Image (cartoon, rainbow, N blue to C red; front, side, top):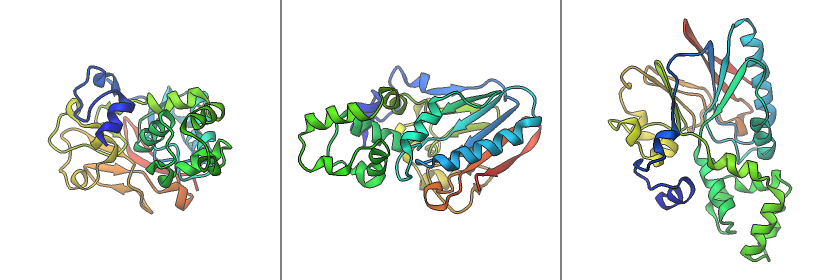
Amino acid sequence: MRDLLRRILGIGGTGDAPDVASRHLNLEFLPSAIYAIGDVHGCLKELRALERKIVDDAASVEGRKLLVMLGDYVDRGPESAGVLDHLLAPPPADFDRLCLMGNHEIMAASFLDNPNPRSDWLQFGGSETLQSYGLPLDIFGSRKQANLRQLIDAYIPQDHIEFLRDRPWTLSAPGWLFVHAGLRPGVPLHRQSPNDLFWIRDEFFAAPALDGSCIVHGHTPGPEPVVTPARICVDTGAFATGRLTALKITPDAAPALLYSD
């Protein structure tokens, strides 16, 4: 896994490369509202439905609002290509959009950089992603790797590939921290391993609350959001349940949940 991270992110697995600081973003104050959206996984219909609900909900909120996407935009669902088109398009009026990195972006970018018909990614939703671009799966049967490279370049837009590679890792705001999977307990943010930011589960779940911040994340799907003083998980497995979830955060009200269904 560390070799994969080094190749895609340009670093090792320890969080000590010069470009790491630029991957951790920080807001000095909360905007009028933040809506953090869980793992989309190729579910364009659910993403559009949830965005409509968010826009309606935010109609009475003055000022700029921020959509924070928590990673895993591709794989498993039927419309990964459409989801990336949507995320690369302008956000709704009066909104900004920030899309964080997820582990499925890393796996997809690794495959697209070095197409391999034996890649594990194909079993973790990559097949559905390739099909969403119109690539038939039987291309792997008889083609050489160089031919696969040419075929992928012909079907998958370069701006989609760059999007998968270039996502920031975390966003900090007063009282909140947004990340795809979680944090390694006891490790400062700038020293966190990307391997943990994108894949961690059990050690993070068992950790006490982070001093001064609640962590908002996805990565671990469940039928309902998980809400504790330490963390809030908004991955409700949209590709399997048809339910995409967002957490609404404002400076002067309790957090609230919104759903696509």
